[in-house]
Image (cartoon, rainbow, N blue to C red):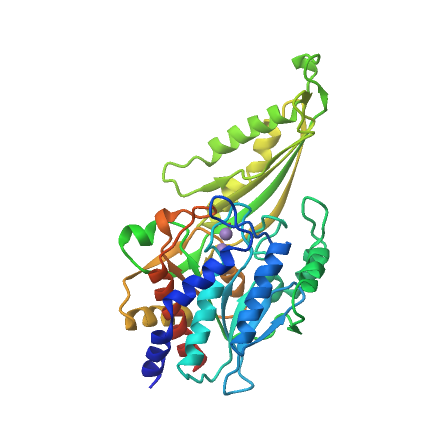
Length: 418
Ligand code: GLV
Ligand code: MN
Ligand code: MN
């Protein structure tokens, strides 16, 4: 019985409708090179959220928002007391982001929900499609903010006080976002969730290279993030002799070179990135007195994260020259493994649908990492062209996105009837 109903939902997934919604969303914050800039809680993010809420409400689903701005689209179940099965991802993007990172998990979930509705499948549990606030951390420092706060509400006040580079707090940006949207009902943080499924483009090359359509995700790499401040002294570029300079760029460059050497591994398993490098006063004729740079360091093994990550501060101190240096670790997230009912249901759905698939580990971070602390969790990957992501050229095939939505629909039905 369950198999026949889930088949009818998968059959109701509409590839063209799903693609068109992606293209409609991609108009919001569209960049000249074909990507999107829709950073968290900007006016663009608010427009994307309003469009999403509209679509959901037109389909007859309710939509609520929690204290950090995450949105919950809900289709009721037959058992009013049952905890929901939840799926979803994020509307926010990197400044030079693509059209699929994040939004696919939401639109794929919405397509699955619509297909379940149109195929007349009642489920025991409610099904929800979530939009987590600020997954990307490009505007506000700590990523996966929505799922972090949902699973650990004690983090709320600290998150609301976080500022972007212009000094705007999350609380202020959230108030603007709320004002730009239709009013939504309130959703309590940490209310029970039975299962969480996140669908995402792979953001790496493996599925495409192996000819697979679905990746059943086995886990997410751990990560550590650091902020390094190098303090020197502003000085005249034409008159100050080298011995008198406290050149923050020179010291920061020495630190960066030594850090890249520290992180060079022959197996190429370490992921080490200095993604932000900010010079003050950033003026052509001034020896710079200050540099702030960020480190994003990831690995699948905790031992490596600890061994190498714990050397970062000492390497910076050794290379500070005449400057001083301060380091803050802004986030540490452990490696997370997925196992149990959700990956099992994803695998079973993939097999029922006859889709080529493989097990795959995620180097990218996702909200599923935090949801796994609250409930059984798993992820579905679909191919992304040449593995290009966090890039305006990011691309995916409509047929793969639809295949993923069929797996979401089938998995949701299986888990929502447990
Ligand atoms: C999320 O976008 C990440 O950087 O892994
Ligand atoms: Mn993402
Ligand atoms: Mn991303």
